Structure formats: C-alpha cells, structure tokens
Length: 66
Image 1 (tube, rainbow, N blue to C red):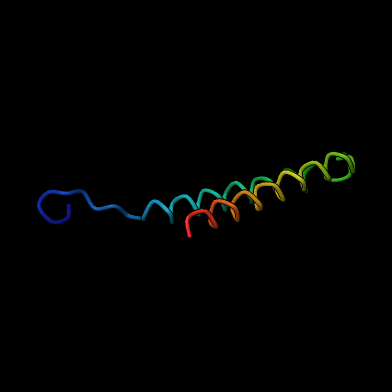
Image 2 (tube, rainbow, N blue to C red):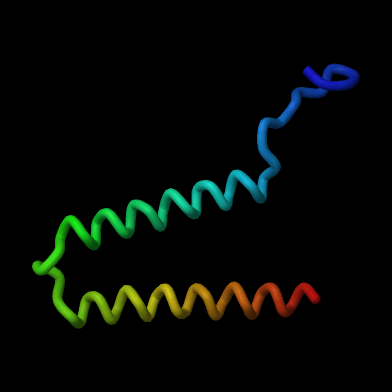
C-alpha cells in the first residue's frame, strides 16, 4: 500500500486502456488472418470502414478537448 493506506495502482487508467485496445487489435488481426481467404471483399471493406470511422471519432473527440 502507498501513503496513508491508499492502495497503489500498477498502471494509470490510460495505460491500461491502451493495453486493452492493443489486445483488441491483436485479436482482430488474428481473426482476420485465421479466416484468410474465406472473408469476402465486402466484409473486409466493412471492417476497414469501421476502423476508419473509429479513427475519425477519436480525432473529433480529441479536437473537442482542445
């Protein structure tokens, strides 16, 4: 325990979220390569569009905080 009985945290919330996000991307990559040629072009385009929208949303939210 840290000062005055407060429990220590091993990682800040942002670092923990980034780690979990990395794990999610890793799982996505594993799934995509595991399925390989069984995935359609339409499905891949759809997934790419979702990722692009997520990036745009992050940029928008980050811009709102400035």
